[in-house]
Image (cartoon, rainbow, N blue to C red; front, side, top):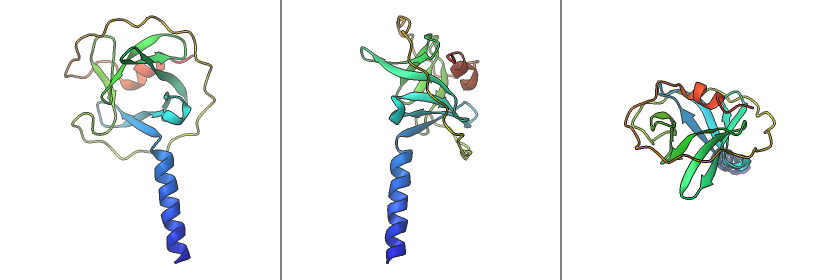
Amino acid sequence: MKRLLFLILTILTVSTLSAQQVSLYDNDGEARAYIDYDEDATIFMWDGTPVAFIEKDGSDLCVFGFNGSFLGWYEDGIIYDKKGYAVGARKGAINMITKIERIKGIQKTTPIRPVTQITPIQPIWKSSWSKTSLTEFLYRGKK
């Protein structure tokens, strides 16, 4: 009985911890990054490198790099670039098969958030993927 209780508590603890992180998949269904809501919606690459963050601007959720640059938007689980093309998405936001997630790297220290650029007007969302990969898109925000 004690083992069963321990197992249930362990499962609940692990699911609670992972509930605060949302994996972001590229157009191949590979998990490349994740949003850590415990770290103020910081976006980390899978190796633990902090590259961007999500910040509310009016009714928009905007993606900014730690270098202060505006990268795109996060809407309904999809990250869009400045032209309105999808560059990444959480599981279930887009109809795609996702691959098994690898083990994440240890999170590196998150930089201080910079003063951000003015957010441009949203374009019309496209129903296709950007030619820019999710990895390339996010690394544009690295400090």
